[in-house]
Image (cartoon, rainbow, N blue to C red; front, side, top):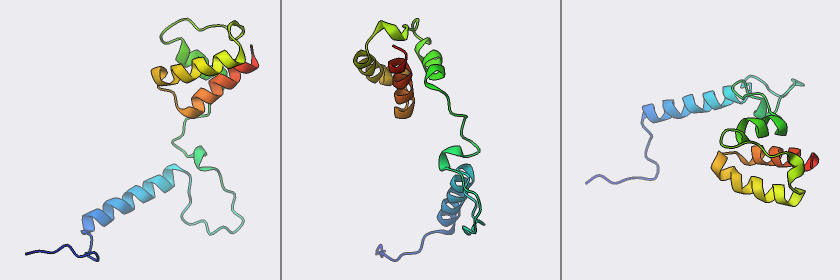
Length: 111
């Protein structure tokens, strides 16, 4: 009978796959494994080479809200109403939390 021992060795394929994923994530987020912190400039993980450029609330509003209906002018609703509307539409439009916040900020600033 074979017993699972807590110190059992992982198969080489599992180790290789884990290392490949770690290297990809480091590369994608802009992490330089050779950087030893010797005054080298660093960039936030959000600026990885595979990250799309940040879009403004106005761009996100135009791209997402007009997919299903005509977009409402920002002055049509109050800041509180826009907060509720964007929260509701976030799920329907499949927006990230950051995208929803940017859209809300744009609409509230322009109402």
